[in-house]
Image (cartoon, rainbow, N blue to C red):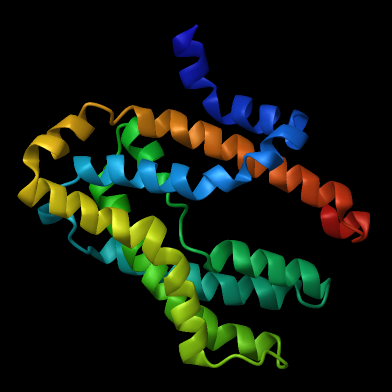
Length: 215
């Protein structure tokens, strides 16, 4: 049973979140704590020495930024809202939980962690530059936008990274203790995914956008 739940965590979490959205909406306040804990447990497994940028990371960052522009230009004439939504989906950095899933699938958590850090910093620079070109009435400066994005990124990504590094260097016993719970990050991701799925279903349910836009 446990193996079944582990193999089907993604669809089960999404289904539970969609069906039980009234419950999971009330649990949305837990999302930051779940993400923080996931990232701390994941970063404890990764040695800072392994976080080396590679050409692949640069290519991914270019796809993230220029792919977002290309998709917007392709969809703009069809529907501006859809174009903006697609652009946001692509320019946003990879999910913080991606390193957790990659590690579980046997991939390189260190490589994806490196890209997660690079991608978040890249988005923090690119978004304030590109979005005012799309929404000309945006009354926020580049620096304000950059700092706003960093204020969201630091507590959930950079702080657990530096905390894991600190524990590794100065509190090895605590670091070793947390290593024993590295599998917990995967199941915390499942709970966070259910909550986000519930929020998504609720947003669609109360939206007054045309059906074509929602689809």
